[in-house]
Image (cartoon, rainbow, N blue to C red; front, side, top):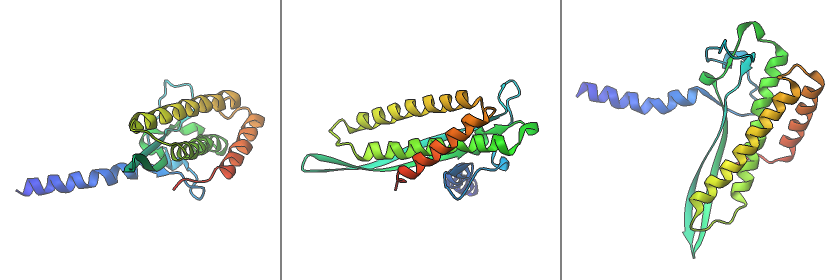
Length: 177
């Protein structure tokens, strides 16, 4: 009986432990190098890696044949999947990694807007998955473009351009929830 109680307590705390490994995006909470908890991939040519994930959930209701969906969208930095090589912990590189997180935030906000502006049918589950997949594809392409154009923070002029554009996008795109 005692083992069962310990197991139940352990299982109840798993979600909290997993959440502790994530940082929800906030303009007031920039990343620090201490947030990068994963072991660096020394076979990787890059100096750092930022793992960011957009997730969503929703509830549905049906009234007079009309499906209404309410969404929750989150953009999180995943500490235990993000890494930096110790000799490369510079302010310039941290700004570059922060912008990956900020760029993801823009796409999370865009996803939320797209999800909430859609009129759904009885096939709403597939429609939601399709919107997410399309948004995710655009987000990945933009992250790759960002790294290519800035040469992973080496091209200072392009880095400054991207910082200005993303800052403007966040100002023009209302937060979700």
